[in-house]
Length: 185
Image (tube, rainbow, N blue to C red):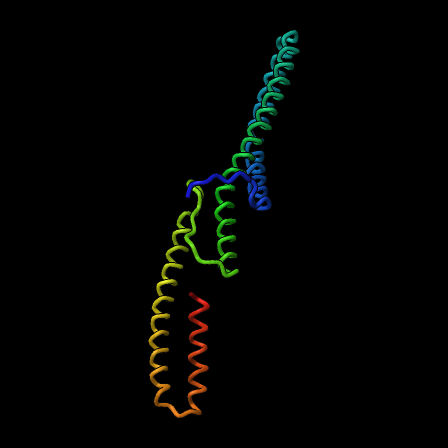
């Protein structure tokens, strides 16, 4: 089943938490290069100021411009990382949301159907495992109902030879078996 989900934040708490954590790690790990560049430029500026004082102002201005560009680059790249991880977590949160709705439908007594995730979503194997599990349960249920039908016919045969006082108990058992079969049909 191919369809496109239009809501990007399916589980905002999870998605925002993971995206913020990844951005924090990206910011923390990328703070090294601005400090390194700043230290290098400061050393270079001190050297230039000592040897060529007239060029020092130009170097300082270029250093400020470079640091501004690096700051803007950092903000932009972290914004991209944040949005990218919202998208990545969407591929995780979407299937889990669909699985939750699927199980709630079963709990509410709706018929069991196949579970499908969108192409490209994570955990495709979970949908396959759930479908296999419910197929196995359905097959076992059919076998159990075939046996219940046999038991029901045996009980009808017994009813002919039982005394009247025992027929009431047998009728209650037969009614209960019929109720069980109706509930799962």
